[in-house]
Image (cartoon, rainbow, N blue to C red; front, top):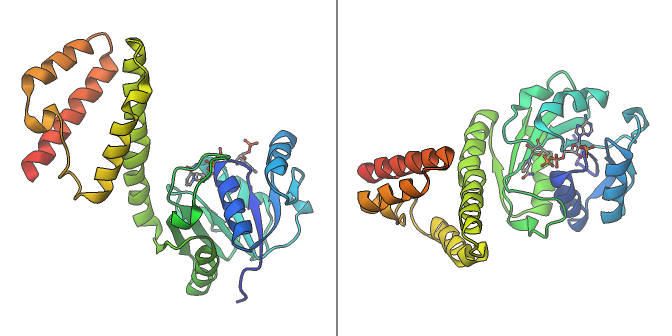
Length: 260
Ligand SMILES: NC(=O)c1ccc[n+]([C@@H]2O[C@H](COP(=O)([O-])OP(=O)(O)OC[C@H]3O[C@@H](n4cnc5c(N)ncnc54)[C@H](OP(=O)(O)O)[C@@H]3O)[C@@H](O)[C@H]2O)c1
Protein backbone atom coordinates (compact mmCIF):
# COMPACT_ATOMS: atom_id res chain seq x y z
CA UNK A 1 0.00 0.00 0.00
CA UNK A 2 1.21 3.49 -0.86
CA UNK A 3 2.61 6.13 1.49
CA UNK A 4 0.27 8.82 2.79
CA UNK A 5 0.79 11.91 0.68
CA UNK A 6 -2.51 13.74 1.02
CA UNK A 7 -4.59 14.36 4.14
CA UNK A 8 -8.12 15.54 4.95
CA UNK A 9 -8.85 16.70 8.48
CA UNK A 10 -12.45 16.73 9.68
CA UNK A 11 -13.18 19.20 12.49
CA UNK A 12 -11.78 22.65 13.17
CA UNK A 13 -11.27 22.54 16.93
CA UNK A 14 -8.28 22.20 19.28
CA UNK A 15 -6.77 19.01 17.88
CA UNK A 16 -7.39 19.94 14.27
CA UNK A 17 -5.58 23.27 14.82
CA UNK A 18 -2.46 21.58 16.22
CA UNK A 19 -2.41 18.64 13.80
CA UNK A 20 -2.84 20.82 10.73
CA UNK A 21 -0.09 23.16 11.96
CA UNK A 22 2.24 20.22 12.65
CA UNK A 23 1.52 18.55 9.29
CA UNK A 24 2.18 21.77 7.38
CA UNK A 25 5.40 22.35 9.36
CA UNK A 26 6.39 18.73 8.64
CA UNK A 27 5.98 19.23 4.90
CA UNK A 28 2.82 17.11 4.62
CA UNK A 29 -0.02 18.05 2.32
CA UNK A 30 -3.30 18.92 4.03
CA UNK A 31 -5.60 19.03 1.01
CA UNK A 32 -8.69 20.16 2.88
CA UNK A 33 -10.21 20.71 6.30
CA UNK A 34 -13.90 20.05 6.85
CA UNK A 35 -15.81 22.41 9.15
CA UNK A 36 -19.28 21.91 10.53
CA UNK A 37 -20.39 25.50 10.18
CA UNK A 38 -19.44 28.57 8.13
CA UNK A 39 -18.36 30.36 11.32
CA UNK A 40 -15.89 27.58 12.26
CA UNK A 41 -14.64 27.48 8.66
CA UNK A 42 -14.01 31.22 8.72
CA UNK A 43 -12.12 31.09 12.02
CA UNK A 44 -9.92 28.22 10.81
CA UNK A 45 -9.21 29.93 7.47
CA UNK A 46 -7.76 32.88 9.38
CA UNK A 47 -5.09 30.56 10.88
CA UNK A 48 -4.06 28.44 7.89
CA UNK A 49 -3.71 28.72 4.18
CA UNK A 50 -5.60 25.48 3.43
CA UNK A 51 -9.03 25.04 1.83
CA UNK A 52 -11.67 24.81 4.56
CA UNK A 53 -15.03 23.52 3.41
CA UNK A 54 -18.27 23.59 5.32
CA UNK A 55 -20.41 21.82 2.75
CA UNK A 56 -21.58 18.27 2.15
CA UNK A 57 -18.83 15.64 2.37
CA UNK A 58 -19.66 14.55 -1.18
CA UNK A 59 -17.72 17.63 -2.29
CA UNK A 60 -14.52 16.28 -0.75
CA UNK A 61 -11.46 15.68 -2.88
CA UNK A 62 -10.12 12.14 -2.47
CA UNK A 63 -7.11 11.86 -0.15
CA UNK A 64 -4.90 9.06 1.24
CA UNK A 65 -5.91 9.72 4.85
CA UNK A 66 -8.98 11.12 6.64
CA UNK A 67 -8.46 12.30 10.23
CA UNK A 68 -11.57 12.70 12.37
CA UNK A 69 -10.67 15.37 14.95
CA UNK A 70 -14.26 15.63 16.15
CA UNK A 71 -16.03 15.19 19.50
CA UNK A 72 -15.87 11.57 20.73
CA UNK A 73 -19.63 11.07 20.38
CA UNK A 74 -19.57 12.34 16.77
CA UNK A 75 -16.80 10.07 15.47
CA UNK A 76 -19.06 7.38 14.03
CA UNK A 77 -21.49 9.84 12.47
CA UNK A 78 -18.69 11.93 10.91
CA UNK A 79 -16.96 8.80 9.58
CA UNK A 80 -20.17 7.48 8.00
CA UNK A 81 -20.82 10.85 6.35
CA UNK A 82 -17.53 10.53 4.44
CA UNK A 83 -18.84 7.57 2.39
CA UNK A 84 -15.35 6.14 2.12
CA UNK A 85 -14.42 3.47 -0.41
CA UNK A 86 -11.65 1.82 1.60
CA UNK A 87 -9.48 4.89 2.20
CA UNK A 88 -7.65 5.03 5.53
CA UNK A 89 -9.66 6.78 8.26
CA UNK A 90 -8.50 7.47 11.83
CA UNK A 91 -9.85 9.24 14.88
CA UNK A 92 -7.81 11.18 17.45
CA UNK A 93 -9.53 10.12 20.68
CA UNK A 94 -7.92 8.54 23.72
CA UNK A 95 -11.17 7.05 24.94
CA UNK A 96 -12.87 5.64 21.83
CA UNK A 97 -11.96 2.12 20.60
CA UNK A 98 -10.72 1.77 17.03
CA UNK A 99 -13.61 -0.60 16.30
CA UNK A 100 -15.97 2.40 16.35
CA UNK A 101 -14.72 3.00 12.82
CA UNK A 102 -15.41 -0.52 11.56
CA UNK A 103 -18.10 -0.47 8.93
CA UNK A 104 -17.03 2.96 7.71
CA UNK A 105 -13.93 1.74 5.81
CA UNK A 106 -11.83 -1.40 5.51
CA UNK A 107 -8.76 0.62 6.56
CA UNK A 108 -8.99 2.16 10.01
CA UNK A 109 -6.81 3.44 12.80
CA UNK A 110 -6.23 5.84 15.67
CA UNK A 111 -3.86 8.81 15.79
CA UNK A 112 -4.01 10.03 19.40
CA UNK A 113 -1.83 12.95 20.48
CA UNK A 114 -1.23 12.60 24.23
CA UNK A 115 -1.30 16.24 25.24
CA UNK A 116 -3.80 18.82 26.43
CA UNK A 117 -4.34 20.94 23.33
CA UNK A 118 -6.06 24.30 23.07
CA UNK A 119 -6.86 26.13 19.85
CA UNK A 120 -4.29 28.82 19.01
CA UNK A 121 -1.77 27.90 21.76
CA UNK A 122 1.88 27.72 20.84
CA UNK A 123 3.15 24.17 21.54
CA UNK A 124 6.19 22.24 20.38
CA UNK A 125 4.45 19.32 18.63
CA UNK A 126 7.80 17.50 18.21
CA UNK A 127 7.66 16.70 21.95
CA UNK A 128 4.09 15.36 21.95
CA UNK A 129 3.70 11.56 22.07
CA UNK A 130 1.47 10.30 19.28
CA UNK A 131 -0.18 6.92 20.00
CA UNK A 132 -1.00 4.89 16.94
CA UNK A 133 -3.19 1.90 16.27
CA UNK A 134 -4.23 0.45 12.90
CA UNK A 135 -6.27 -2.44 11.56
CA UNK A 136 -3.17 -4.01 9.98
CA UNK A 137 0.63 -3.73 9.92
CA UNK A 138 0.72 -1.91 6.62
CA UNK A 139 -1.62 0.84 7.79
CA UNK A 140 0.30 1.09 11.06
CA UNK A 141 3.50 1.72 9.11
CA UNK A 142 1.81 4.31 6.90
CA UNK A 143 0.58 6.20 9.97
CA UNK A 144 3.90 5.82 11.76
CA UNK A 145 5.70 7.38 8.81
CA UNK A 146 3.64 10.58 8.92
CA UNK A 147 3.73 10.67 12.74
CA UNK A 148 7.55 10.64 12.64
CA UNK A 149 7.46 13.73 10.43
CA UNK A 150 5.69 15.73 13.15
CA UNK A 151 6.99 14.27 16.42
CA UNK A 152 10.00 12.44 17.82
CA UNK A 153 7.75 10.37 20.10
CA UNK A 154 5.59 7.64 18.51
CA UNK A 155 3.96 4.80 20.46
CA UNK A 156 2.17 1.62 19.38
CA UNK A 157 -0.88 1.52 21.70
CA UNK A 158 -3.92 -0.71 21.14
CA UNK A 159 -7.46 0.26 22.20
CA UNK A 160 -7.35 -1.62 25.54
CA UNK A 161 -4.13 0.05 26.68
CA UNK A 162 -5.20 3.42 25.26
CA UNK A 163 -8.30 3.33 27.51
CA UNK A 164 -6.05 3.12 30.57
CA UNK A 165 -3.62 5.66 29.12
CA UNK A 166 -6.50 8.09 28.69
CA UNK A 167 -7.67 7.43 32.26
CA UNK A 168 -4.14 8.08 33.53
CA UNK A 169 -4.02 11.29 31.49
CA UNK A 170 -7.27 12.45 33.10
CA UNK A 171 -5.70 12.04 36.55
CA UNK A 172 -2.36 13.59 35.54
CA UNK A 173 -3.73 16.53 33.62
CA UNK A 174 -7.47 17.21 33.96
CA UNK A 175 -7.67 16.55 37.69
CA UNK A 176 -4.43 18.40 38.46
CA UNK A 177 -5.72 21.32 36.43
CA UNK A 178 -8.94 21.26 38.43
CA UNK A 179 -6.93 21.37 41.66
CA UNK A 180 -5.25 24.56 40.35
CA UNK A 181 -8.71 25.97 39.62
CA UNK A 182 -9.89 25.23 43.18
CA UNK A 183 -6.70 26.72 44.64
CA UNK A 184 -7.23 29.86 42.57
CA UNK A 185 -10.88 30.17 43.72
CA UNK A 186 -9.82 29.85 47.39
CA UNK A 187 -7.26 32.64 46.98
CA UNK A 188 -9.69 34.88 45.12
CA UNK A 189 -12.16 34.51 48.00
CA UNK A 190 -9.61 36.26 50.27
CA UNK A 191 -8.42 38.66 47.53
CA UNK A 192 -4.93 37.16 47.10
CA UNK A 193 -3.57 37.12 43.53
CA UNK A 194 -3.68 33.44 42.38
CA UNK A 195 -0.44 34.04 40.43
CA UNK A 196 1.33 33.73 43.78
CA UNK A 197 0.99 29.93 43.28
CA UNK A 198 2.72 29.85 39.89
CA UNK A 199 6.23 28.96 41.13
CA UNK A 200 4.70 26.21 43.31
CA UNK A 201 2.67 24.80 40.40
CA UNK A 202 5.71 24.74 38.10
CA UNK A 203 7.91 23.12 40.75
CA UNK A 204 5.24 20.47 41.44
CA UNK A 205 5.15 19.52 37.74
CA UNK A 206 8.96 19.47 37.58
CA UNK A 207 9.12 17.14 40.59
CA UNK A 208 6.44 14.85 39.13
CA UNK A 209 8.63 14.40 36.06
CA UNK A 210 12.03 14.11 37.78
CA UNK A 211 11.22 11.95 40.82
CA UNK A 212 9.75 8.47 41.20
CA UNK A 213 5.89 8.66 41.36
CA UNK A 214 4.82 9.51 44.92
CA UNK A 215 8.35 9.94 46.30
CA UNK A 216 8.28 13.76 46.29
CA UNK A 217 4.81 14.05 47.86
CA UNK A 218 4.77 16.60 50.70
CA UNK A 219 1.98 18.17 52.78
CA UNK A 220 -0.12 17.44 55.88
CA UNK A 221 -1.50 14.07 54.69
CA UNK A 222 2.00 12.69 53.99
CA UNK A 223 3.16 13.96 57.40
CA UNK A 224 -0.04 12.57 59.00
CA UNK A 225 -0.56 16.03 60.50
CA UNK A 226 -4.14 15.40 61.68
CA UNK A 227 -4.53 18.78 63.47
CA UNK A 228 -3.70 20.78 60.33
CA UNK A 229 -6.02 18.60 58.25
CA UNK A 230 -8.85 19.19 60.75
CA UNK A 231 -8.30 22.96 60.51
CA UNK A 232 -8.34 22.81 56.71
CA UNK A 233 -11.64 20.92 56.81
CA UNK A 234 -13.08 23.56 59.15
CA UNK A 235 -12.13 26.24 56.62
CA UNK A 236 -14.02 24.23 53.98
CA UNK A 237 -17.16 23.70 56.05
CA UNK A 238 -19.23 25.92 53.73
CA UNK A 239 -18.15 24.02 50.65
CA UNK A 240 -19.12 20.39 50.95
CA UNK A 241 -17.65 19.40 47.61
CA UNK A 242 -14.21 20.89 48.28
CA UNK A 243 -14.25 19.25 51.74
CA UNK A 244 -15.09 15.86 50.18
CA UNK A 245 -12.31 16.26 47.63
CA UNK A 246 -9.87 17.21 50.42
CA UNK A 247 -10.85 14.16 52.48
CA UNK A 248 -10.71 11.69 49.59
CA UNK A 249 -7.36 12.91 48.26
CA UNK A 250 -5.84 12.93 51.75
CA UNK A 251 -7.03 9.33 52.29
CA UNK A 252 -5.54 8.32 48.95
CA UNK A 253 -2.20 9.96 49.81
CA UNK A 254 -2.18 8.12 53.15
CA UNK A 255 -2.94 4.78 51.47
CA UNK A 256 -0.15 5.26 48.94
CA UNK A 257 2.20 6.20 51.77
CA UNK A 258 1.39 2.91 53.57
CA UNK A 259 2.26 0.93 50.42
CA UNK A 260 5.70 2.64 50.10
N1 LIG B 1 -8.18 18.87 23.15
C1 LIG B 1 -7.40 17.93 23.61
O1 LIG B 1 -6.61 18.19 24.54
C2 LIG B 1 -7.37 16.55 23.00
C3 LIG B 1 -6.16 15.82 23.08
C4 LIG B 1 -6.10 14.57 22.48
C5 LIG B 1 -7.21 14.05 21.83
N2 LIG B 1 -8.38 14.75 21.80
C6 LIG B 1 -9.50 14.15 21.05
O2 LIG B 1 -9.56 14.80 19.78
C7 LIG B 1 -10.95 14.91 19.34
C8 LIG B 1 -11.28 16.37 19.12
O3 LIG B 1 -11.12 17.09 20.32
P1 LIG B 1 -11.02 18.68 20.32
O4 LIG B 1 -10.52 19.07 21.67
O5 LIG B 1 -10.34 19.15 19.11
O6 LIG B 1 -12.57 19.04 20.23
P2 LIG B 1 -13.21 20.45 19.82
O7 LIG B 1 -12.20 21.54 20.03
O8 LIG B 1 -14.53 20.52 20.51
O9 LIG B 1 -13.43 20.29 18.26
C9 LIG B 1 -14.32 19.37 17.72
C10 LIG B 1 -14.57 19.76 16.30
O10 LIG B 1 -15.38 18.78 15.67
C11 LIG B 1 -16.40 19.44 14.91
N3 LIG B 1 -17.51 18.52 14.70
C12 LIG B 1 -18.34 17.99 15.62
N4 LIG B 1 -19.20 17.14 15.04
C13 LIG B 1 -18.88 17.11 13.73
C14 LIG B 1 -19.42 16.43 12.63
N5 LIG B 1 -20.45 15.57 12.75
N6 LIG B 1 -18.82 16.64 11.42
C15 LIG B 1 -17.80 17.50 11.27
N7 LIG B 1 -17.25 18.19 12.30
C16 LIG B 1 -17.80 17.98 13.51
C17 LIG B 1 -16.74 20.65 15.75
O11 LIG B 1 -17.42 21.59 14.97
P3 LIG B 1 -17.89 23.03 15.54
O12 LIG B 1 -16.65 23.87 15.55
O13 LIG B 1 -18.88 23.49 14.59
O14 LIG B 1 -18.43 22.75 16.92
C18 LIG B 1 -15.32 21.09 16.15
O15 LIG B 1 -14.70 21.83 15.14
C19 LIG B 1 -11.77 14.23 20.43
O16 LIG B 1 -11.94 12.89 20.06
C20 LIG B 1 -10.87 14.33 21.67
O17 LIG B 1 -11.14 13.29 22.59
C21 LIG B 1 -8.48 16.01 22.36
